[in-house]
Each structure stands twice: as structure tokens, then as C-alpha cells.
Image 1 (cartoon, one colour):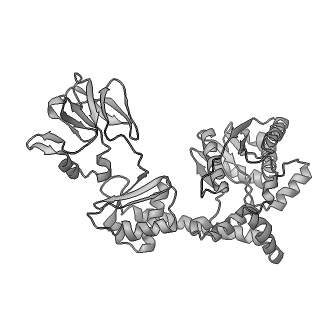
Image 2 (tube, helix red, strand yellow):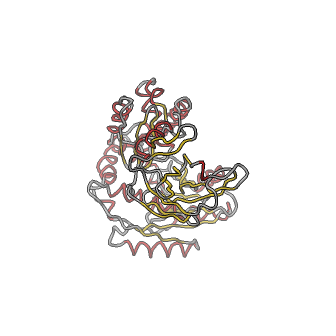
Image 3 (cartoon, one colour):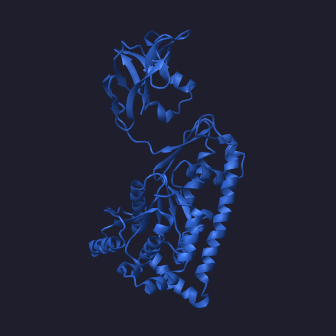
Length: 434
């Protein structure tokens, strides 16, 4: 196993003094990984550190921390402890929530260029594939765990993914390692434990190499998924909407339903959002895409929402409520906090923006009835201008308006009254949202 890890690290081409982190729980798997990395640290000249996430879910959690500290002290490996306190809500999965928060805190610790190693092995991979099958997952889910993936600005490697747990156990015994036994691993209320104790052991009685076979299936699924994603990216190039990050409804509808779902999943994933459930995806394809042009349908899942306006499909974080009745005096020398919107600030721009003598404005949001002066047209209703500017309906009441006394002289990002702006050779103040 040490030889195989040496070969993998050689391919990885760690840079001298690059920081390599081992996610160290104190259990057998992570202790084996830590021991292997300790043996290879000087050969590859990387900086080895260990990180332990204390979930405070087990009565012996603090004793585990002490154990991990002692092991790392013996190895002379820097050791970092991070604490998580999980607040379960109705319908939450403890396993899923713990995993999500664990990786979130790991991303906060890792610096750009760092590498995180976790001790997932072939047995874990087989269990993951079975879990995904039981959940009715698609090809991406059946690909299970990748051997390497980005994690924030760092990289996450699973160098033991091709080794069964029996191999790790044999190494630990041979090296005389002492590890923690988590008693919760025997609790069958957790799905992964149930599969390991009741299902995988039964399958191995009939097919001794079933874990390796399941792991191979996951690899085949991962390769097929990679090809599908490449194909999907090719399709996406021709589906762009009229604005950045939008898709064209009419172009999407010209595709078959399987292709629609494929490109939508890729689009959503590449924008950094979690994928919707099968039911939500059906709603998206069957209701959102087919809605009439005069409709503004809305679909929410997790932290994402999809809307359509005219021929464009929009994907954004879930809209946060704001004070639509705000009426605040803004001294432009300082950014103005707009709750649920962001910070309103000024930047200096040559030939554009408000003249320097205008150092304060009243900031409001649209209430209805506002009118702007447009050269050559006179006073126009803001509602009409929003339509002409192709601003989606749900965004219109979230755009800050700048007033001088009772006159609207600015719409942030779209309009500035001609009597208040600088000449082409002057430096002006242009409002923008941070």
C-alpha cells in the first residue's frame, strides 16, 4: 500500500513545501492514511498537517480529540481542531448535515494550492454506490466518490479509494497502530451502517469480490458522466440567453426532454448550486419552460431559485427580503448598507457619473408612479423604462433609486439625469452595488 501511495504522490507532483492536510478522525482508516503520509513526508518534501473536526455527537468526542493530539504529537505533525455543533431541523439527515458542515469548515481552513486527503476506501465506495441506487440516483450519483475533485481553491484527494478496508486493517495491525472505535458505527439506524452490516456482508458471502466490482461500476459511471458533461457543455454554447448567465427558453424547448434535463443539470452545477430533485426538475421542464410568455413562473430548491422573463431563464440565489419602503439620506463618502441587497457605493469614472458637487442623495426603492426625464422624450414612467431595459419584474423593486428632493435623478446601473452628470473630460461619481 505504501508503494502504491508513493506512485500516486509521484503522479500528483506535490510541490516542495506544499501543504497537505489529512482529515484525521482517529479511527482506523484515517490513522492508516496519516501513518502512510508520515512515511512519505520527507520523500516528497510537503508540509504535512492533520485536521480533526469535532461534531460533539458522541459522549467520547473530547477523548477522541485527546487521542488525536497524542498521535500527531508522536508523529510531530501540526494538529488543528475545529468544532461543529449541529442543529437538526425536521426532515434533516444527520449524516448529510454533518458531512455538509464538515466540508464547509474544511474549505475555510484550506488555502489556495493546499491538498486535503481523506481516507475513503473501496468499501466506502461500494456502500456509496448502493446508497445512491437505493435513492434512485442518476449517473452522476452512481459515479459515487471521485478520486480527485476541487474543494474551494484547494484539491481533495482520496488516495485509498482502490484498497478494501481489510487491507487497511492488515496494515494497521502490522504497524501496531492504535485507533478509536466509534460505537455509533454499529447503530443500524444510520443507512450506511445498515448497508455495511446487513447488506454488503451478505453480498460478500455470495460474491467475495463484490466491493471491487461495485467500485468498478462506479468508475464506469464516472467515465460515462464525464463524457455526458463534455457533450452537455457543447450544447450549452448554443443555448445562451440575451443576458450573461441566462439560457434561451426557445432554444431549450427545441431540444428533446432528456437533453433539456442534461444541460439544465450542467448549467445549475456549473453555477455552483445544488441540483434539484427529480420532481423539481420535472416541474422545471414541464411547467417553467412551457409557461406562457406573459407568465413569470418561479421554482425554489435549497439556496437556488429559477425564474423566467420573456425568453430568458434565470438562476440565482434565493431572493432575500429587503425594506422596500426605505427612505434614507446617503452621504456618498461612505457605502450605504441596504439590508437584503448589499452595499451601495460610489466609484470615480472619467466622463460618466454624477458631478462631485452632488455629495448626498436620498435612496429609495420603486413604489409606483415614478417618472424620469429622458432627453428627446420628456418624462417617462419608470415602469415603461424598466420594460424597455428588459429588467425582470422581480428585480425592479430591488434596484436603488437616487433622489434629489422629490425628483428621481438616478437608477443604479441604468440611468443618470443629464443635468447632474459630468462632462466627457471630467471625473464623476458612479453608483454601484457591492
